[in-house]
Image 1 (spheres, rainbow, N blue to C red):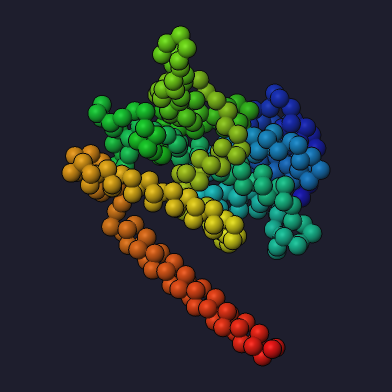
Image 2 (image 1 turned 180 degrees about the vertical axis):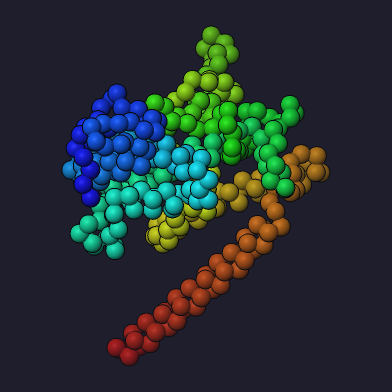
Length: 318
């Protein structure tokens, strides 16, 4: 696919505004689709050699793709514009369709840029707010928390969709941005208690300054909003040393609980909590106890058998 080099040059210049739906140049009409194809072609061609321009390339794709999608929506397009549909659309525009990763036309840098751009475009199209003070009820209606709910507990901040006022947006260069307080709703500051003593206190972040969001953080927010879209990878099996380390942590946890229960019994139930460990967790630990006893018993039998065999061999040798 060949795109007029003059169009590419014009698109790459800082003065080109991709939000313009039509812009004449010589004999060619530049519309949103032409711009998108040209930018995709440029990113696909250059990304293999110029990996350092990743952030700029993603911003270019954002700036070129968003007007095109908005134009399609305004025309009554019934496409849902999910992350998969946006990626497929971008690849189709430049006829990019490798069969697999071994295919000579496959480009990992281009795939990465398309994926990152698609994630960010979805965040903006859906006007997602990653940390809004409220939650969805059983019927799917958003409810802001009332004044009695603790504002310094991050668990009370949830993903909100269609937050027109506070959701993600792109700046003029195509960089993803949102107000600082929606990136980190609760912050910690050191408070001076006395001349020699300071302590950390949690505060509600009220900073409305717009902040650019990095590719990695944007992906994290996308996964937070769409956990079902995150690829599930089979975890690597734990090593023997990791199992032992986890067992030591579990041992400390159980000992700490025993201290609480002992104090509870000793004080006649006046202090502590008998509900520290749920019935389900207690059953898991009891099952673990049975498995450990079985293992130790088997190990003991194996050692006894080994001892008997060793004695028999010794007697035969004599």
